[in-house]
Amino acid sequence: MFFKKKVNDEIDYDNLPRHIGIIMDGNGRWAKKRGLPRNAGHKAGSDAIKKIVRAANAMGVEYMTAYAFSTENWKRPKEEVDALMDLLLTYLKDAERLMHEDNMRLRMIGSPKELSPEIQEQIIKVEELTKNNDGILWNIAINYGGREEIANSAKRIAEDVQNGIINPEDITADTVEKHLYTAGQPDVDLLIRTSGEMRLSNFMLWQVSYAEFWYTDKLWPDFTEDDLKRAIIDFQNRGRRFGGV
Ligand code: FPP
Image (cartoon, rainbow, N blue to C red; front, side, top):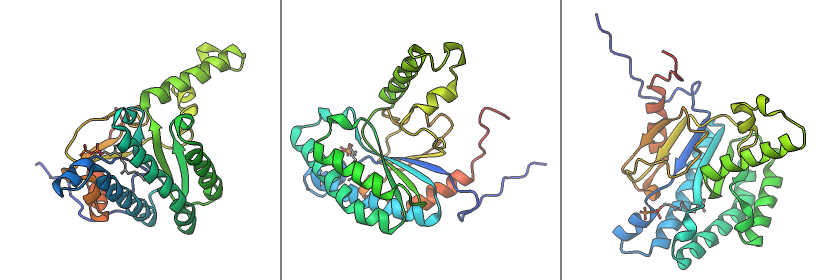
């Protein structure tokens, strides 16, 4: 006899994904649909992520990473890049108070050196201020690229080999992991992408190896706490085998 797997329609708070990755896509289309400039979409997108991180923290999710600016996003028109950088700075200034009040930690992942000195300083300030909080750890990916992250890890391992700290034969997947921006954090369990696109776009290539993907046609600024809950419930109804049976 064939029994259908029981499908839960409420969140099981004892079985939350530990790490949720988000590719926030569709800001431009959201704005276009409303006859607004693209930058208005990014502003609405930054309001959405603020709410989602707070909601995830309140649920008890331990880690969240969202793609705010990729290494490829510099190719956008200067006006859009400038607007995104302004939004990030404003967000990071707000984060100083908001993150700390909610007991959340902020960490930037990506290469900081191409960012303005003001943004770099603000990142260090918020990271420092929130480092002892024990709520969600919220990685904001800025000037981030998954391939660059793995290449950087390889570079640092090569330096360790050169300095006699490690033998090449002792290099394992664990060694690579220890040199990623997210060293010590669990892999991504659930990866959410909005706007109907089904691409990784160079996001956390190492950390999503066993992630469950969840897509929605909703554009990022329309994504709500209920959508996050839906994604988590779907995740909890899937059977994860990690290569086993
Ligand atoms: C993709 O939409 C989104 C981005 C490239 C940037 C994401 C940035 C934000 C949500 C705002 C800044 C974030 C913070 C944390 C302040 P798109 O522009 O590619 O949309 P489209 O595909 O519809 O054109």
